[in-house]
Image 1: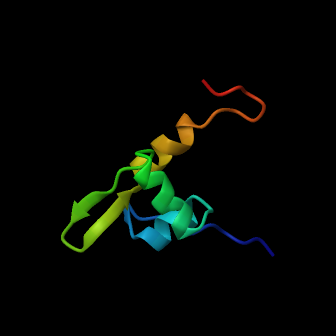
Image 2: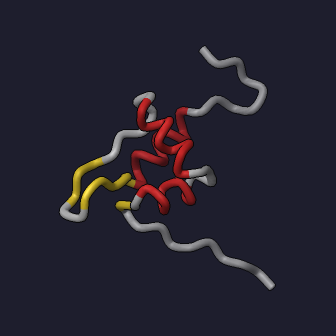
Length: 68
């Protein structure tokens, strides 16, 4: 049986964004506090743009690569 990944929305709640990044909501809070991910304000409150989360992932160093 093959399990498919969910289709992620363009804007995500804190819990959804944390799940998208495969981390705890607390770790996402830490990344936000450090300025690594920046939420947006929507009519429903604070949300994380999928494009911002993807930008964060792309900024991570390759495994074994020394960080600057």
